[in-house]
Length: 105
Image (cartoon, rainbow, N blue to C red):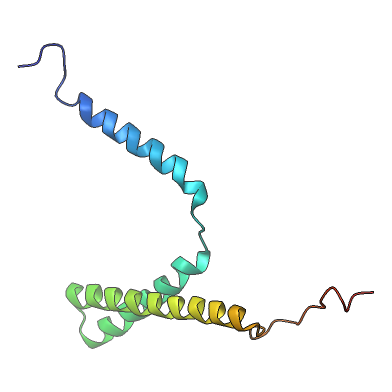
């Protein structure tokens, strides 16, 4: 038996260290709203389709999971396409070509 130590004291210390690490590392994260909105839109669409077929909570959950997975794949593919286009030097669809340093007056 340890004297003078509470049973929950070490749990608060660990939580405090974890919170400090999260706060220190958050600025390094690059968050894009599309990372959340695209999978969320697909998940909601999946829920609606699943509930039309079978109005049960299990169907809603399966539709949400499958829709979110499909949305994440769509988002990942769009990011991959942008990276490939950048490496090839091709402009993205809908973007205007910019004048290079030799073309500027």
